[in-house]
Image (cartoon, rainbow, N blue to C red; front, side):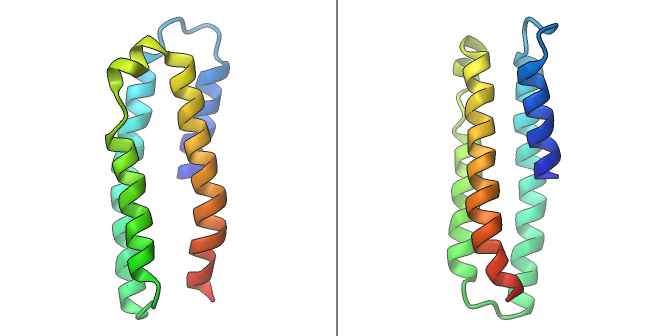
Length: 109
């Protein structure tokens, strides 16, 4: 789902037919908040069920991700829509590469 949201964010960036993208950006941010709350809860419950020894560091990473989403200033987004989309894409890219491909991969081990 995170890849899907990132893809739709990229498509929004490239869509030159939409002059005011604020509502779509705000919707993507809300979708990220909703999905990550669900996903992180499920992942943390799974880690508990297998007695994963790095659960605390995972929880901190998850909380940091959620805090970053909650700290997005929608007024700034409205004033700088293209930059806001780029920032969201960079944030998602960093998360997908750093967290999923490194931290989450350790759970499987």
